[in-house]
Amino acid sequence: MRLLYRMPAAVVSDATIGIPLVRFLFEELEMTPELIYLRSSQNYAREILEREVKDLGLSSKIVYNADVYKVREGLEEVRPEAVFGSNVERHAIEGLGIPLIFEIVSPMRQFRLVNREYFGYGGMLNLLELIQNDFNDRWRSKERRYKARW
Image (tube, rainbow, N blue to C red; front, top):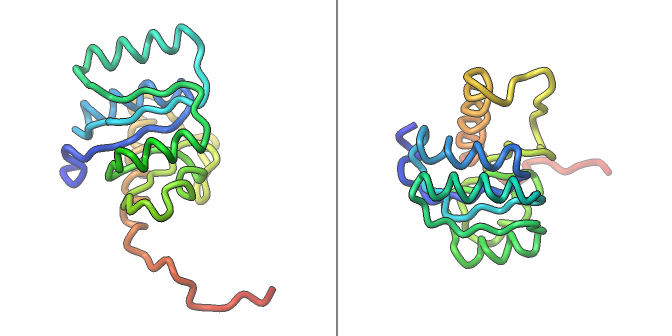
């Protein structure tokens, strides 16, 4: 996806999704993961992530046991162009001027990955589908054109 080439990004997730996502973003989509926030992490997950970052030659800021406050603070400081996270991060970036949020981690606002692959070749295709849908979604109007009855 040429449109994401060298785009600075942030990853906010748990270790099982976040660690492989860093390599996928860097090698396959050619993005630059500048911030990596893991919501929870065990010592072995930390070792794996640090080995991945070193192997890829990245100088990403890594934060473990990240909560919403830490994430918002880091995003405000670095201001990446894209965030890979959840619906929580969608609300956390409001007012920061960050143009793209890709909801690929639970809780998701629109999609559910039930009985769909999340790893391997099939998982990569599902992930690309989510990224493309969210990229196109940013052009939709954010203002309501109707009034709710309640």
